[in-house]
Image (cartoon, rainbow over all chains, first blue to last red; front, side, top):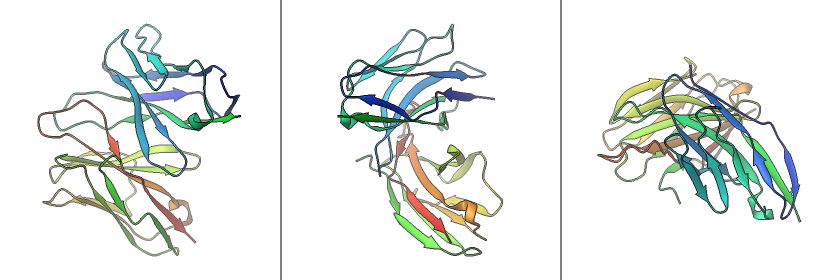
Length: 115
Length: 115
């Protein structure tokens, strides 16, 4: 089956530090990959996505590159802010059916950025 | 604002009781998904409906059931509640006619506490 593994948190950083959250996946087909973010007390929001190998998704200073050879989609940000404190989820879907497909999520990584 | 509305936001009930969670999808979205987020288990996919029909089933207990109505809103019914059912229940939607990008749009969740 399909699965997503991401590094466990919490990850605690100082402001302006470099952030990396590792994500690897197992899929029976050719998935699309996503990073979602959940701020305290809120639902999940799409942060970025990539649909094919070597695609780079980027948003709000975050980046992730779809690496088919290593089945990875690591999230990076060069300089974090306190406002980046949240839980980050890596996810995949296989776009097979026109009716849409569920997302399979990793366990989430809590990030805490201190001033 | 994702456009997905969930009610109630918070619910406290006792073991053995039954509750209904409601979700209104984004305007035009045909698919509705339900996820359970527990403290130690991340996001677990429960069930998906597309245009009123069940399309995919995940780790949904027999005590739980869902449906999608002609106006596309969905309800998740949880019965014979146990302490372990305490969780955040998310609804997500996707699939405006003619589109399937893989992205899901999440509501803010319904937090269920079973005492």
